[in-house]
Length: 173
Image (tube, rainbow, N blue to C red; front, top):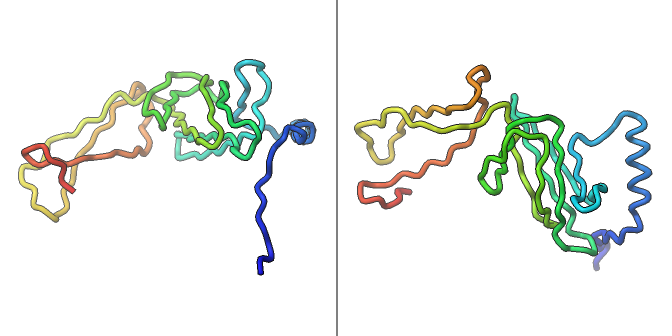
C-alpha cells in the first residue's frame, strides 16, 4: 500500500503576497538576498527563483534557476544583479560577459544558469614545453600557465579540459 504520495507544489501566483511579506520581514531584520533577479519588462522581482552561491578563494560561483513547478513555463527576460562588480563568465555558454555587476538574459524555468565572478579576466592558457617521451599508461606531468588581466591578483583554481590526440589527430582515450 502507498502510504505517502509526493505532490509537487504548483505556484499559481496566489502565494506571491505571502512571499513578499516574508521578504519584507527578513529585509527589516537585515536579511536580504545577495543576488537580485528582476523582470526586464517590469523591474519587479522574478518570483520562484532559487540562487545558490559558492566561494572558492577569491572566486565566487552563482547558480540561478527558476522553478519549473509553476503555471507559466514561458522564458522570461531578466536582469541578474550580483553582489559586487567582478569579471563575469557565463559558464553554460563558455563566454566572458565583461566586468559588470549585472547580466541581462533570458531565464527558462527549470534550466540552471551558472556564472563565475572573478577578480580578473582570464586571457589565456599556455602549455609549457611538452614532454619529449610519453609512455602509454604512464603518468605525464604538464606545466600549464594561466594568464590574467590583473598581475597583482593571484589566479585561483581553475578547471581545465585536456584532449590528447595521436600523431594522426585521432583522440586518445
